[in-house]
Length: 508
RNA sequence: GCGGUAGUAGCUCAGUUGGUAGAGCAUCAGCUUCCCAAGCUGAGGGUCGUGGGUCCGAAUCCCAUUUACCGCUCCA
Image (cartoon, rainbow, N blue to C red; front, side, top):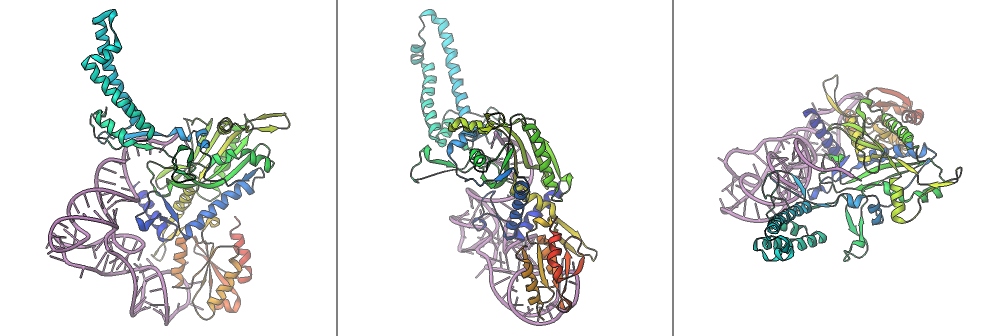
């Protein structure tokens, strides 16, 4: 385990040192759990996107793409359940480290006081019999009145503060009431905080803060697909079953966001929602489970790095769900989710929008709300999976060491490095000619500084699969050497064959 | 969010009981070099995470804050 922590740290610093990933806003001390992709990181990330997009959209005639906006109508998040799901004021006791809902804490306490009053009332009723006037009693008996006043004073203020989101006052009320933690028995509380996983902002006039102007940064890309279901189906003339694929940013205000790219507050998803006839969803669920695993394995990452984790407790919207987990240096963690979401989302939007979201089946002459099978993969997590799987330190036969990123060739940020053995005698000019042959189709990297060995090591550290070296002999026989990143073997080939050779190397 | 640990150059670190910052590698310029890092010469780069405080004087002591890591907690 300790070894893996070390490895994880090495990967993080390698990612920074070689221009893959930087902490966000670093010169201002950084911003927690936000990261920027550097010159080589963005290439790798784009390659992952392209590889996924092609496998989904290009390889399936019945899957089409979409790029919906990050801002969406606030009612969408009511319909999806995101607004209500996570909207409670919370408070922690510092001694017991237990977390409570602040409103529940206060209400429970008020209830306890009310219970005390009730006890007195019961006693009094026994004493006074039929003539007992409870309302009168509550306002006249000194002890009961004290309790009652306490409740009355706090109750109105409490609900007003809750309604106004005045969390400071909620905290003040907890302190004034002298509420103690049931576990630790102390009053050592943190501030009251509103936990809402959605980031919000206002649309329109900045001064207007009324609820109607609030818009959220989407916490998932899926809803953009659902609300466009009919637009896509009709405009692209899709028939069930069919899918809509989308790559895009999503935002979640995680309470604890940590572990490098694994849990970020701003992240990117690659999602595909597959619309099917009701009753067929589970067979499609199985289909996509297999298909997605196949995609992962096609990257050449060993199968033992992956596993399925079937959900036993299903979310409110699903009738089957599994995760594809990856063996990160921090352990097996979720990389992709495959969920059978039933008709939950489309039905909810149908209800909230008042618009029909049905598919009309020409064969049976009936309309119905399709069921949905979702595949949702974290782009940043895939990036991290590829990077951490690729990182290795090797001891070579001559006793020296090298750090290599064994990134699958098709995803590598730099495909080919062009290296003149020395930087004179016309070698750089020849190298540029070769670069011109390749740079239209492959991300190339030209380098003439330093000894050839050092340049090879630098390319290894970036994960460049092939280095083409130009030497004096090249000027005579028009042959270059191609050096393989993983085997470090070299072969000598004619310049005229380079195009074909490189194409062949990247074709699988 | 709570608790613990840490933050000195791009990286890895040194900095003695407080006395105005150093090494190696890396980077850049030039030389040298005909295939697997660490050849030669020179140069640039740090208000020691940030903000306050104590002191004649703070990288060093105190407080706050921020970021990262570890543990707990949370994860519709």
